[in-house]
Length: 185
Image 1 (cartoon, rainbow, N blue to C red):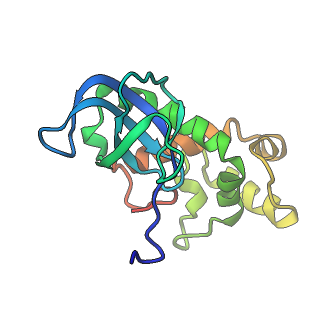
Image 2: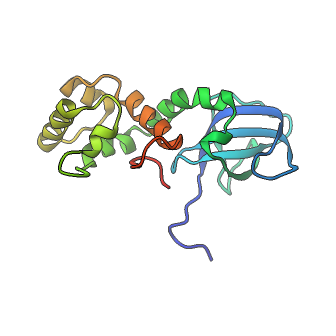
Image 3: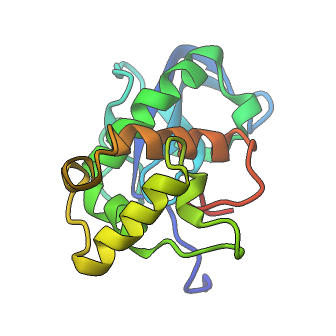
């Protein structure tokens, strides 16, 4: 029996597709490989694709136990360093699409993030949010919580919040941050 908190990704976003790839996770395993970003836990994954399938960068694929159409199996987790150069290059835009597709979840972070220390607020860990924007966002959400990314843009002038959150996700995946706000360790 699995522990209740052990969650598996149901969907993933394609970062790179190798028609004839060698597995990084399972030595000696070869075949059509997909490097992907898990939708729920932001896990970097290596997937074995079914034969004769094609994938677009950024495409959302089913990887849960039920309803797989193009993926044969999830081979395992990857580190940022194990990603192909193509997967690394596509990560920022794919992460931004993921944030936009799950906008309510990510906007909730803007409404919920709290101070980490007396001098540092978790909002300030998101690129582009300094002390000024942080104070404005905190004041804004006290009056009325944010519903969508456009709210933040309209109400405090923060440009492209989805892109900023995606940038932070990439930093966390790359291991460039001590504190993780989006990526589950």
